[in-house]
Structure formats: C-alpha cells, structure tokens
Image (cartoon, rainbow, N blue to C red):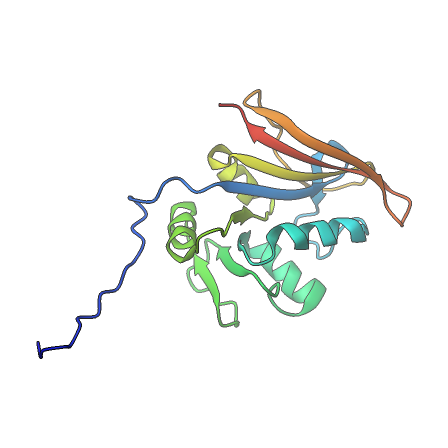
Length: 192
C-alpha cells in the first residue's frame, strides 16, 4: 500500500454481537382483539387519532410487515410504502417483489430480525406492524406492545393474540375520537 493511503474498512453489524434490540409491536384493535378481515382491504374503523399515533411512533424507524398488511397499505391507502420508514416485508412467497426501491423482502422471522438489526442505526426502533400471523410469530420476541384499544364491536376474522401473564400495563390514556369512538392508547411491557 502506498504511503499515506488508508485501507478502507467496512463495519457491518454482526447479529450475533448486537445486544438484543428492543422489539416493539404496534397494533390497533377493536373489542375482542379484532384487527381486520383476512383477505379484505382497508380498516374496519376510521380513527384519525390512531393514524397520527402510529405515525408518531414509527416515523424514522424500521417497520416489519406481513405481505398482506404491506399490500393493504400500498394498494388500499396511500399507493406507496409508508414514507419516512424502512419497510421489511415478510412473506412465504419466494417470488414476491414489492416493486418499490428501499423495501426489503424476507422469507423468515429470523431473516427479518437479522436484516432489521443490520440496517438499524443508533436510536432506531424496530416495530412489528402486523398482520395476525406476524404478530403471533413475533410476540414471544417482543418486549413492548403499543396498542390502541378501540371501543367498537366489529366482525373480523383476524385477531391480535391474547396476552399472557408475562405482560403488564406500563401506561394508558383514554380518549374520545373526533369520530365519536372511544379508544385507549395502552403500552404493555414484558415483566422482567
């Protein structure tokens, strides 16, 4: 190497050497833990305050979605991935492509977490954003849940898993939406 020339060294995060990153689930659910209808686009309710809450929590962070949830956002809501977030889409379909630059497609929970931790910048959080199967897969690995409990009876085929005794309420705030629907922001944490 010539004098005065520095060798460029790349530093990649090795998932085995990273401390376990906080893994947060974020979910909105109606009575009975209903989160949606499998195979049906769109939300079962209109709650603009929850949309803003989701945005505040997830902006500038990493979001892991199941394929159907991701497609629902892209095709049913805004026509593109959520801006200001890094999206990771978990799917069993090995041929699946999102059609968007900067969206990562993975095929296992382990691959999703490895990818998230490799691209994670200091201060960034990892959010699990649904749907039903994705919540079930990641619940044992999460240490925090940010839930919006919506006081509304709706029919749905997709639900959020029941929480076990390892979870406790860390904080809660009750509100009434401009749409007249009662809701509560609840943060759960895993007991030590």
